[in-house]
Image 1 (cartoon, rainbow, N blue to C red):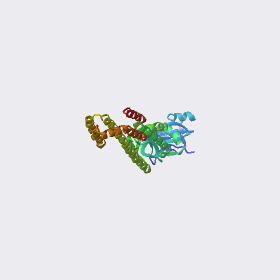
Image 2 (spheres, rainbow, N blue to C red):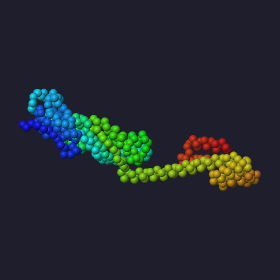
Image 3 (cartoon, rainbow, N blue to C red):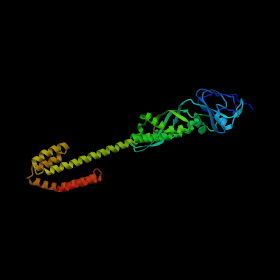
Image 4 (cartoon, rainbow, N blue to C red):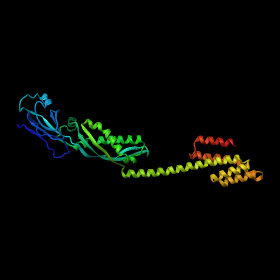
Length: 343
């Protein structure tokens, strides 16, 4: 049996996070060399034991107390024992990429419906707890690189990103269409959300960034069409409200003119001002002319006819406004009572 006198590992790539030394045959006096940004953890029977930082370490019963306690190593030079030697890379792994494999449906309260979005970004990590990292993620593998982190944690990132986006847009009252103007805030929120889960596995998240959020082209076209339709409907609604207002003002003008029919001068002064202001000169001009010739038989007949038909016309118009949804039932009842009271 060949015992190892010197243990050292020079990683061929900085992408390797964990590497297991191929031999377990060690002995008291073995030289353990740990480079800068490395850490070594000894294992026995699947249990993590003694930990070594950068430097040259001569294994002895003094610096492997946990292992000695487990296997009851006797004192004495060159005593053999077996143990697994795991090297952990402690450097920061920057420029890792993450992204959504499929669109995320998010409710946009401003638009009033769900919008599919994709998100992409970069992040960095560092192993800060070698025990947790190896025992929970690496297991019995002989080595592990950053790919194991991506495989395990990308889903965690996407889930927390989805929650962060939803909560942010709802709480801020803004549309998802404004997302790319809020990337810094969204990056900070997501990094905070995923921190606890990464800490649990001995990993520190560094420089987590949401670099862009976009909407698939097909969905974006649908949103644009919906926006155009919404704008068209709003313009139509605004036009209806405007017409309703004009109609209501016309009713008020006719009522005032009717109340002043007994006073030709008052009708002339008030009617002309109102008529010109409302653009209703012709109908009001007839009414003014009739009031000025109040003593003529024809005027009396027309006045009598108008007095009999005006309330009916008003009520008919009022009913049309109600049926068109331009006034409420309460408005209708109030105006109806007012018209009937003046008969």
